[in-house]
Amino acid sequence: MAMQIGAPGGASDEPEVILDINTTPLIDVMLVLLIMLIITIPIQLHAVNLNLPQPQPQPPQAPPEVVRIEVDAASTVFWNGLPLADAAALEARLQAAAAQPVPPEIHLRPDADARYAVVAGVMAATQRAKLDKFGIVGSEQFLSPAAPR
Image 1 (cartoon, rainbow, N blue to C red):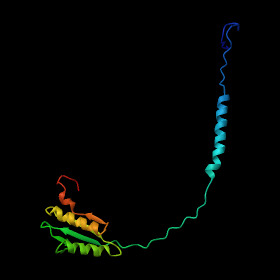
Image 2: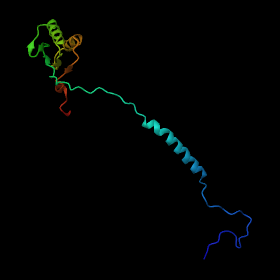
Image 3: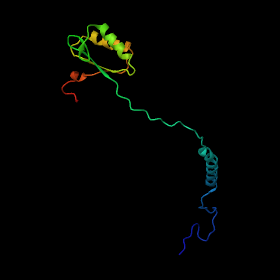
Image 4: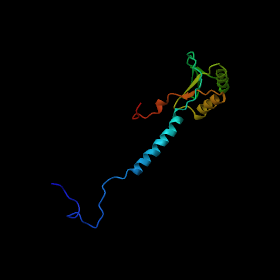
């Protein structure tokens, strides 16, 4: 029981259909890919030897001193708990702190009722003394009760 394709008896005017795949274009594509792979492999294996310096272990450094500057509700400025007479005394202390080999961290804690001009003056004096490690602490007093802590 064989299956016969075409007209019975084998006589027809139409050419016989070839059901084979033409593999010539596939072989051409494979050869091009193979040539590109062969050309690019030496580039990937190219290496430059470098003599990089080895890291030297640094001795552990002590954390910098922390200076607490507080401004109370009466706009009095305190240096580590000691009241300062005026802005010139603050400037002198900041200049002395900046002259240290390891400049200290400045933590400013203003009161909510302190005058803005005094707090801004402390920040400006710190900037003039070129003390870069500066932060404002105690802002949790300004959080609303519903805000997460």
